[in-house]
Image (spheres, one colour):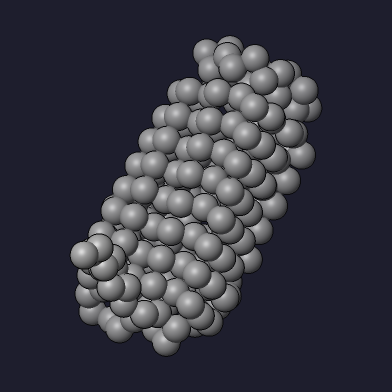
Length: 207
């Protein structure tokens, strides 16, 4: 069932993709890209809202101004991708993995990140609002700029996670096992930085 939708993505044809999505919705047919793999694509303006992307893989792709509202990203894998001005809201993100990727000016609203694993990635000027994580595993991830609001993390391990030049409000990191994590010019309001976080000093000036 995913063949035609997948081919429209691979041809970087958002208009054709949206027309096919509309046709399937009118015919009460499933919207599925389950287990599809997309490699080295530049995708702009795709709306993946309500689409099943279970175990879908994006590898070496650039996605700009794409929407994932109530999409299913369970077990999805984003490897070496660039995400710019993309919006994630609602849906299922259990087991969503991100590796070696860069995200810029993306928004995450009212999503669940249970058993998600993010590694070797950087998020610039991204906003997280109303994000809840049963378990969230992160290693060597840097957040710079942007803001977090109403984020709760119940479990998981964070290693070498850094927050720089940003604000965090209504945050609950109580369940995080953090080690070798840092913050610099990052304001955490209404809570304390959990054990395992160290304030990073500025660079020393050469004499």
